[in-house]
Length: 286
Ligand code: HMG
Ligand code: MG
Image: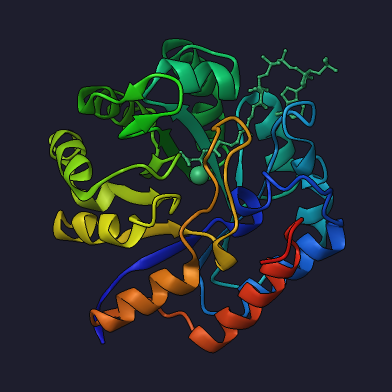
């Protein structure tokens, strides 16, 4: 196989953050440790966000302290503000992620800030992380559709992505937060975004709510993107995005990419084991 594609595993964070039942810390650690055995090189483990907003992620420090780190894997965490970055640095995260929205409605609901305010809030986070030599990844949510504002103008996505890259993000992940994107909408959005920077600066982050995530990945591959976020077991959703159930399953993405001749470095059998455990953690096992 050739033409490598990087899978950014977000299951322990995006997958679990929406679960109603408080998942035991030991199970979160076990899930990440199982993922570390699969060949994945990027794993988003947890988020240092306000536990008042997302109680499920309230054990971020304990999870980071408990995982068995394998050399060559970057263990990432989400950081919404300076307090989150302090937690991430204390936990020795290998990289951090800042997140903004391309729509005002979701920005307010998710992080209690306007789009402009959110950029000002994370600017010092990115600067401090750079001082500490910790790579920063950026997320833009609602890149085609917002649960509150409807369709997102591609221009908004380009502006937010440009701002994140200017702050020093090494990559910007483009989030179809509610899984309503179509390949056509992805094409329009990427035409705008790729006028800002090359495809190597972007990742696709597709939720599979409407069953189109793999088609949207194909549209993104055709534009040159070679990094995709996915959640093992297809867990996921965002507590502040009504209807955002289900990140695209890592197993499905890996199988799809391998069938197209791409190399992910991921062992499907080991991934299936982690997927079975991930699904067993759901409030209503599927
Ligand atoms: P706020 O209420 O406006 O902020 O929330 P605040 O500064 O007034 O803080 C409220 C309380 O939280 C205070 O505690 C703070 O100390 C505490 P109190 O004084 O009342 O006792 N606090 C924190 N505690 C721990 N760690 C922190 C932290 N920050 C404040 N980092 C805030 C603003 C941004 C903090 C809040 O809205 C928040 O945490 N939001 C996160 C929501 C979230 O995690 N959403 C899911 C992730 S995004 C996503 O899933 C999309 C993505 O997957 C891509 C896609 O699909 O599109 C990435
Ligand atoms: Mg997401």
